[in-house]
Amino acid sequence: MSVRVAFSTTEGTIVDEHFGHALYWDIYDIGEEAEFVETRKVKAQCSCHDPKIFDIMLSSLNDCSVLFTAKIGESAAAYVIKKGKRVFEAAGDLYAITKELVDKHLLDSLNDSKNKQNEEIRRAS
Image: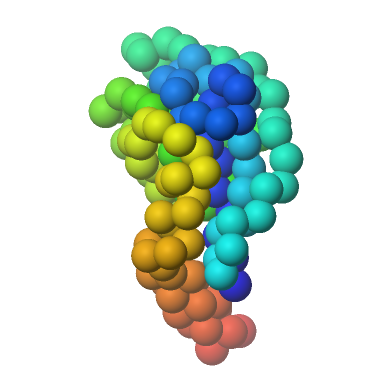
């Protein structure tokens, strides 16, 4: 089972954008391998004073469980997490980051949590 992950990037090879300034997000499904899905262009919503303006950006990333961005402010990160996303600061070579996520199985715990949640929903039905 894979996890859909978005990386803020200006050119598709490095994670180099601040969350609120990111115009492009490369989307990957990460499991046993990192599989590129697509590049999404979003409307950058930078305004560090009102995190709710990030809803437009988040709606473009609604199927992504995890976001990687070079930088994100504390209130924006809290808002994104409240919306059910995991967010990490990481800058550098996108392929090196995806390789490390795959090689070290760093997203496996997200799948475990998702599987437990689905099992609880089935039992409650």
